[in-house]
Image (cartoon, helix red, strand yellow):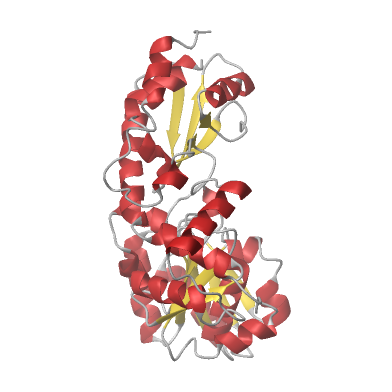
Amino acid sequence: MNDITRRTFVGLAALAGAATATQPFAAAAQSKTKIDFAVDGIPLMPAEYADLLTRLAAGSNIAADEYLLGGAVAVLEAQFAALLGKEVAVFMPSGTLANHLAVRTLAGSRRRVIVQEMCHLYNDSGDCAQQLSQLNLIPLAPGKATFAWDDVVRVLDRSASGRAAIEVGAISIESPVRRLHGETFDFAEMQRISTEARRRGIGMHLDGARLFVACAYSKRQPEEYAALFDTVYVSLWKCFNAAGGAVLAGSRELLADLFDVRRMFGGALWQAWPYAAIASHYARGYLERLTVAVRVGEEFLEQLSGDQRFVLERVANGTSLFHLTPRGVDPASFRERLGMMGITVPPPDGGGFWLRVNETLRSASATSLAAAFRSAL
């Protein structure tokens, strides 16, 4: 075991001062931020969240909403509609409800919805679409992030040729896929499916909970993905640090009735401005900041890749998640020593860790991070 050297501490002391010029926002809130490989965004503690919300309310014209109408919620909806290149966006209290109402709206009376077998809507939403909207989810591509248009055609042909023909009303695609450690849906196949589905009048929904993470790695803008879909869901807490919430974006005509449908499903909160104000704050310039963090992360991984004391595994077609195994060391002790240096990693998975790149890495240099990981051995 190597001692944690004074040189390492000197390098880590530079973490807070290594931030780039791309972060003019929320300097005071950022000053307490440490490097955290365990989350998608910035892990704000309750006191930090309350402090930032107080300062935002004091320094700007944040107005309360009323049953999710007007105020900071309306500002947030307009902001994300613009970011996604859609006419409107609607606040939702959860991603589960956003995905459900999207496929419900797109499918209409056509009850079949094609999804990935590994997607969140099929696995982690309590069968809400089936139980509450009588939709029939058809899972494709078991264990994979991507299905092909040919897979869709087989479903369409089988649905049309049965004794009782049943139409497919919507196709839902999750990308990146959480259950596959952030693997993305093949973009060329996504384009083909979108083109062919629209030709046949089939609705397209994107579960883009972490869409902006995919953008930072693919160098594509959010609206480039969103243009392929009729509706797009984005999480407000995964990357934008809100205490909860989501947005669902689409055309004005398509989403016109969702305010009433949202209420019908119990999603009409009295007020959501504390969620909206924080998410709106962090959404400004987020992609630019995350792009800087991705560059730091890639340089950090490059520095460790040649070190025989670590085993590094990248996800094929992946984004922000990678698996790092330190050799010849107790994972719990390794994690504890990193914590002493202000670096948080998630609990070990076997002998290693699934680490996640997020914007906290902007306050570090790749060299200092690599030095810290070596010192923790």
